[in-house]
Image (tube, rainbow, N blue to C red; front, top):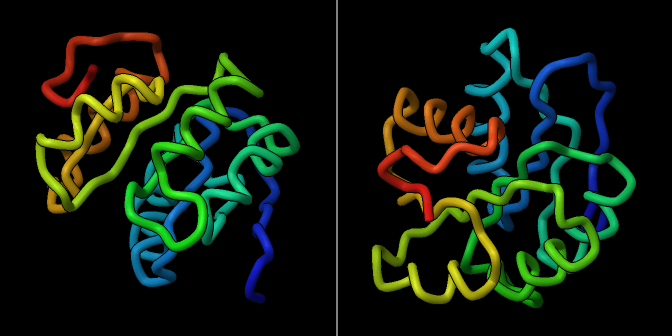
Length: 140
């Protein structure tokens, strides 16, 4: 339903929140992550304005945040989320390329990942960021 942020039941492991305005992107990412035993998608949001409330309520370890969304963009949502829940780790997904890096750093993101990244490197980045590491090629 438009405007809703969808929550899910979540066992232990790395808890992930997906924030992207494209339902097919969220679905593809959720499907890929659900195949991993240590990852659980705890919710999905279609707009950056929903991300802070969802992160406070769902307590994800990692948030995948799209940069380009109608309404509140990913950088503004990342900054607001970091202020409200500093322990959440944020991976910004972008189709804009490396020129988005300075804005991602200022917003407080932990990694900047191109949307075309293959699943293996994306999962390594997610696990690195969730563990507090900074040694993946996408980490900031």
